[in-house]
Image (cartoon, rainbow, N blue to C red; front, top):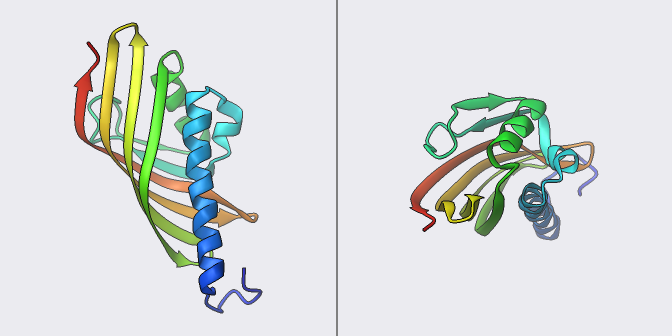
Length: 150
């Protein structure tokens, strides 16, 4: 990254930062699906805000703070078989240490054999780079379609 904080990033630096954010989101999905809650917690900033108020399948409203967010997600899907995919990221760097993005998503959540959902929608996120690493600081899940498992 540029040594001067006020100096704009080069095209190559921008691409490297965007790739780091893509890697962050890949870890988010893998660690959640493999139920690795301690490393999963590290994808979030301490002051993360998660809005699931539009998701009737994840009852809740707005959850604040890393520990509460991880606890909420662990309780929601910790005992379920889950598969999450993120596709077609639209990531915009708004400063050398801030970015926002939208990811098309698919999730498979099986609470019991044959009972659960397949969901389709978007993650709307904001990211902040702290201590040389990107973290999710805001996340909003919106669903376009939910199909029950049969």
